[in-house]
Structures are given as C-alpha cells and as structure tokens.
Amino acid sequence: MISELTNSDTRSSPNYKAYGHIVLATYRGRNATVLREVLEAESMVCVHAASVEAVAEAIETNAALVVVTEEVFTNQAAAEQIGRCLNDQPSWSDIPVIILMRDYQRFADCLGLMNQTAHQRSVLLLELPLKRQIFAAMVRACLQNRQRQYALRDTLYQLQESNRTLESFSYTAAHELRNPLGIMTSSFDLLARMALDAKQQKIVGMGQRTAKSMNQVLGALLDYGKMRSQGTESFLPVDMNKVLEESVSNFQQLIKDRQAKVSWSKLPVVLGARQLLVQLVSNLVKNAIVHNEAALPTITIAAEPRPATSLQAARWLFLVSDNGPGVAPDDQEKIFAMFNRAGKSRAEGSGIGLALCRRVVEQHQGEIGVRSVVGEGSTFYFDLAQVGESDVG
Image 1: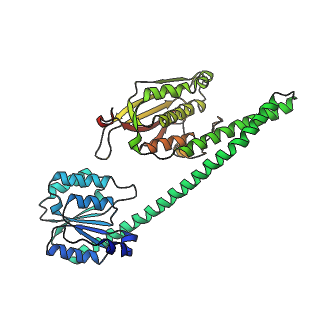
Image 2: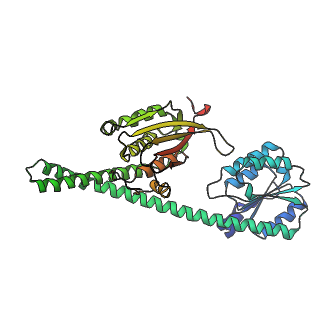
C-alpha cells in the first residue's frame, strides 16, 4: 500500500460523508504522487496498491470515483472480476472508473472488463502521458455525475421509507377494521334470516355484498402488508406443477361456476418461496377467470427457459394466457398499481391482486408484465430463477 489515510482523517472530512471518496489504485512512484495531488484538489483520496481487491472494495463502498492504472489488469480474469463487481452495484449506482494506460499494453484485458459489465458508459480509458488540466477536468465531470447519483440515492431511500410508512399504516388500518367489519357482516347475515319484505331484503342484500367486498379488500391489504422483503438465501427449490395444482384447487367452485378450463404443460422446478408463488399464481388464474366474459374461459400456463447472460443467471419465463377481453395499451402498466381497475370489467375484486403479484415477483428479483390485444386475450408473464446445482439437496 502506498499511503493510507487514517480512520480519524476519513471521518473528519465533510466531503467523505457527503459525496464519497476517491480511490486511487496504483503502484508507488512519481506518477502516483502527481495523480494524488490532482485528485486531492477535488475530494478525499484513499490510495491503495494496484490490485483487484482494492477496486472491488471501492465499488462495494460506493466510492465517488475509482482511478486505476493498468497494473491492476494482470490478466483478463482480473478485468472480468472488476466487471462483475460493477454489475453488483445498487440500482441507483453507476460508479465512474478511470483507467490510465501507457501505450495500451493491456488493452485486450480491458476489453474483458467492457464485455463483462453493463456499465461501459461509466468506464473511461485514458492514455498516459496526460496533461494535468485535462485529467482534472475529467475527474471533475465524473464527480459531478456521481453527486447526481448520490442525490438520486437519497431520494430513492426517502421514497422507500415513505412507502414503508404507508404500508405499515395500511396494514394497521386494515387489521383494526377487520373486527367491526365482522360485526357488521354478522348483523347483515342475521337480518337476512328474518322475515323481511322485498324492499328490506334488497337493502340487506346490498349490505351483504358491500361487506363482502370490503372484506376482500381488507384481506388483500393484509396480505400485501405482511409480505416483507426476504433474502434469496431463504429460497428453496419449488415444483411449479404442485404450485399450479394447489392454486387451481383454491378456485374449484369458481372454475365450475364459470365452466373455465385451466391447463398447463410440464412446468419446471424454480428457486423461490413456495407460499408466495402459490399466492402469485392463484391471483393470476383468478384474475384470468373473473375478468373473462367468454362463454368458456380458457387459461393456459407454460414456461420457457431464459439462458444465462453476463448480467443475470439462467431463469424461467412463465406465461399465463387467457381468451378474455384483453387490456388496452394505455392500461397495461396501470393494472399493476394498487386499487387500479382498467377497462370496463364489472367483476368484483379488491383492486390489489395484480399489485400483490408484482410485489411477489420483485421479491424474487424478476419482472412481471402483460402482452395483450383488445378483443384477443392477454398473456401475463413473469420470470423466476432456475435451480442451480448448488441449490439442490
């Protein structure tokens, strides 16, 4: 290590707290001294030996800028390792990396970094010798861009905290309303068994239907509120065929009443939380039936593999198709929002089902969406992780 700032020095710097620090990974020498002088004019600088470990730590700690000399790239494997570290950044982060090269002797290894990461635009290759003014200007531009990212991060964290507060409130409110709603439902049921005239029966019937609808909404709110983020380390192999069987069994009466047909081809084993996946599939199947005005609603479920890429492990893409009325293009994103009911469907529902589906899929680090043409049905899709060898047993 060339020179390392003490912990007390680091903590006393307001720049370090507010904007992050610059990490310089290079070998000892006059060049390192000049680089440090330029960088210290902009922010706190931590100087480390030219190593992959130093760069990886800088990325992990959300440094403001990483400046490395070509000695870090001892081989293509080292470059690819740095690329993977860049890919593991939080969604808000796109840390700038300046690579200083002399005669581009290790340019081929740098290409390995470029091919490995999705953050090519934040990686800047500069050839030495380089004028101090030009280098300083580029450093300043990188730091300004990074500060915008920090501002985005802070806004994102504030929004997440607001969402947690709202979700906690909705869960508490739904829980508190459950008891009085139960009393109201029992009262309407008791009235329905009494001798009433036609007008009174109509009023009581309206009350029963309203209470039932409110109970569905509160139940969905409680389900949504109980769904806390859980780490993927708690996920286990789940047979999606059994998930479908349980989901369909939950709606046997609805399927019988609507004369619906629900079928699926051989489905794979995925990595996930079984009960959440049952809830996901149940909501999608129920949604495909209750919002379907066809004489014989038909729902098919299939899965197809998505090969691994440099950015993501192999996954399964699931398709839930129906012969319903379809979803207009303008509504295809809105339907996944809370309490949003697109189109003219008169079917009863909580307005939370698809929002809950999105939350389940996001907890499984996947995406959910819909492809649809009005009058030709819809296909809802979502992806789940494939089971790797290390996940079995």
